[in-house]
Length: 269
Image (cartoon, rainbow, N blue to C red; front, side):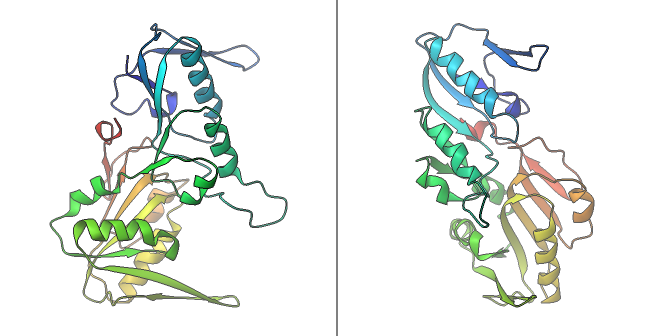
């Protein structure tokens, strides 16, 4: 026995132990590990989505009570990581709540491309990234690496250093209701590689790519660890001047003429 997985990662090509999961008539979740895990080393792989945390906790508890030796928990995608602080009175720090729950499991945790590493104050997880794997798909072009916001500078800088490419940061300046955006390096006549941790509604990517074009950029590409593509994001992105968007399959995704999906199954093990 090696891998136990929740339903959230069943789309990944990982051979895992069969887990039966059903619901009682009133909706209570029931699960059972089909193979005897006693004394065996187990790695649990699960996303943290808006509705699967209980499934993960029950799976961990089942493995522990069955005598498995849980080596680590791998989280390809963790939701709630954008809620890493209080912006308005009365809010929870939702990401902190999730991390505190995971900390109490007393299992080493690896999280891929978490939105905010500030959550380490709640959980000492190991941060990993699939972005280098995605970036290798575009190594033949000489890009200027661009991050759409200052908060993403660290991840973009890592990719720029990996590929030995220059970096430009989009700086936003707010004056009252007006927001101006400037680049730290000239983008005119350059091929651009935008680096994101996730694409949700696509709004940030659309605005950034249009701004780049207005300033004379040539071909624009984007790599993003997680493709959420909420609502009609895929349709909206077709209007953006982005030649190719490369995402991982940390979440279930379908490829299209504009979107390439990279399987990360073997990368997670």
